[in-house]
Image (cartoon, rainbow, N blue to C red; front, top):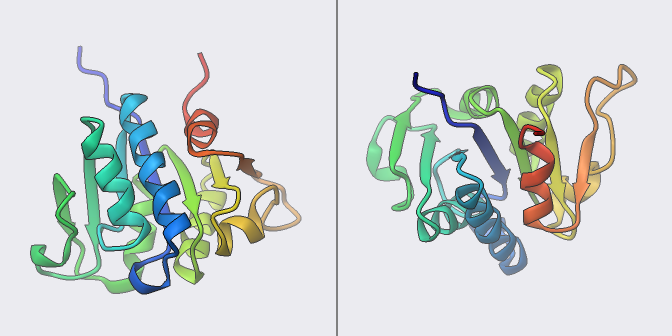
Length: 168
């Protein structure tokens, strides 16, 4: 019987707004996802997404990029599977809902959108401490008074992957 692989979304800064520190943490997060035997899911573009995919590929993992455009050429070169969503920012819903767990590395409003979707779906989520942006602003918090799921703070990428992986 085939068992589906666990899928972890890595979300965060795109392109120019991505710091070197966030890139390094994303790369390590991708490596840890591959080492855990999970599939990396992301928005398929640059910045955190590209660095995480590169880390996963360097560790022998599988990567899925869900891009907002209608042309495969927009995806970063480390994506094994590219989904051309053609729906722009709405692709954030597909990224978050296609993941069993979510790891945030830095990020802006798109990252917050993905965390909000994960929150509504009660997915396990971790924010890598020190990566900046949304991850540092919302790590350790609930997004509203319903307290559906807490965005856990991870001191490093290995801990972030451990937080979102199934226990046992």
